[in-house]
Every structure is written in C-alpha cells, then in structure tokens.
Length: 127
Image (cartoon, rainbow, N blue to C red):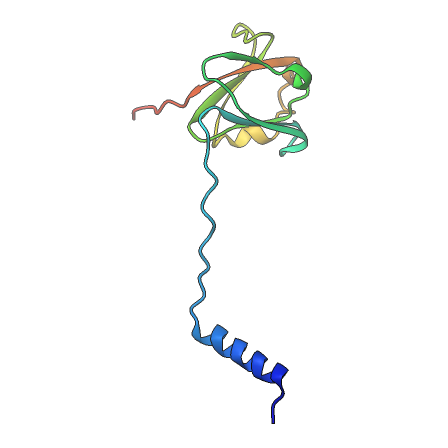
C-alpha cells in the first residue's frame, strides 16, 4: 500500500502531465525615450550607469568623462557622444539603440576626450 509521500508524488506527477504548461516569456522591459546606458568597460561591463535624460540638451559626463567605453541609447533614441561640451567641430560618434558599434568604443582614439552627449528622438529615414 503506497504511503502519503508516494500518493502526493503520484498526484503531482499526474497534475503536471495533464495540465498544459505555459512557457510565455515575461513582458519586455519598457524602453524610455531619452534612456541611455553607459559603462567604463567594453561590452557594458565595469562601472555602469542608466538614466533617462532630457532630449536636445547637452549632458556633461561628469565623473564618466574620458572613461566611457560602451554607450547605448534605448529604442527610439539617438545620441551623439562628443568631445568637449557638445562640440560638433571635433570628432563624435552617433549611436542608435541597435548600433552594434556601441558596445566597444576603444577603437575611437579620441574616446578619452569624450566629455558630453546629446540625445534626440530617433528619426526614420525615408527610402
């Protein structure tokens, strides 16, 4: 005669085998217009920061100045990572949410001079 533990196990196995299991993924995390992630190491490692910043304003990197080695805006946001105080006369990098190049900025010889960024709503280009 089966004991209480065996009966419980049999009941659980029966329920699991007859109950449809759902494998729905959790809902995607919302993205924020103006949201950016930046880190001091390539591939979003090291000291990282995430924030939602105002659009069309020059934002100083402050303690991250000269240290940002990965930078990614949220979907719908485009950003320019710039030298000086948003100086477009110097080299800068443009990033969108799907920019593959944003994970490793070490290839930019000027990255040590990056001091600011400015973000705007991503524009779709008509084809």
